[in-house]
Picture 1 (cartoon, rainbow, N blue to C red):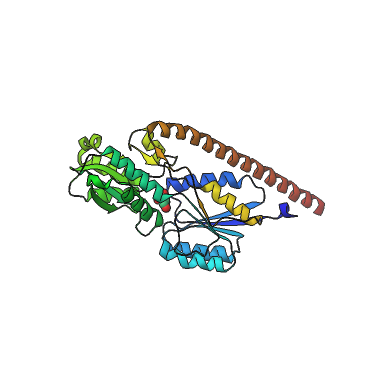
Picture 2 (cartoon, rainbow, N blue to C red):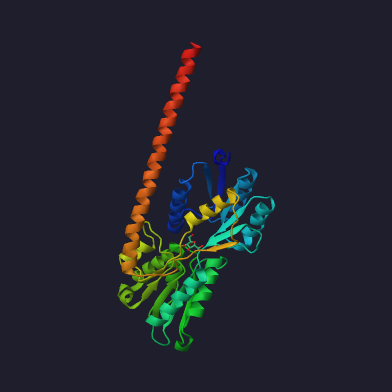
Length: 327
Ligand code: FRU
């Protein structure tokens, strides 16, 4: 009977200490809780390619039924992802891409489209010859490359913008430190960061040097995640001016895994819909929705704990019964 069979999904996450990825985890857990026969093993590589390779090797050894990989850096993680796929484990690549088509399915947002929207929006806000500070995510990851290329293609070429670029490696502190190294902020009109946490980091550097510049500089990020110090909160409280939604796909990735496990055909690529600009009113609405999601997740978590304690009591009872019998 198919419904009785238990399945294990292995999830190799490049880093967990990040608001967008925590939102992804909430969405995955809610989706997982819809099925009774699914276990999920999550491994956090803490942004370390070697660690992620070791963890994927471990998941292959454990013979997980489906493997989900959100790779840290494309080049370094490609061989091990291909190895898993060749070992016969259905492999889903999430968010960042690998440099091979030897995987079962890819699930992720449209970073090129996001970049393009950001470029068009920046063009509409800025006068001719304005200066843009572009803060890159890690240059060896596909979302950074696509968010850059889309941005360049979306910019109005006739306006002759000047672009300064630095690499913030997807991190708030690195973006802050790299921004601090710039000799002057005087002529910066707009900051385009490849994610919201780097946008927040850049703002901190600008405030530290000269807070009177803040009203003159537009700050844009990408992601629009919920959670403490994430994009939605920062837009709602005015720290950043706008963001572009990059859905985490946490629920979608589990749905694709379930399709594979139940023998249904899957697409090679699921490019997530929902790319759009998030301004202040939108952020406020989305924040309310995400509160509901978090409440829902907490309720599920509580139910799971209740269930566990029932099961524990039951097994204590059983053990004492056995003891009584033995006596
Ligand atoms: C989180 C993150 C997100 C970004 C994605 C790109 O680790 O940096 O902010 O959208 O990864 O892979």
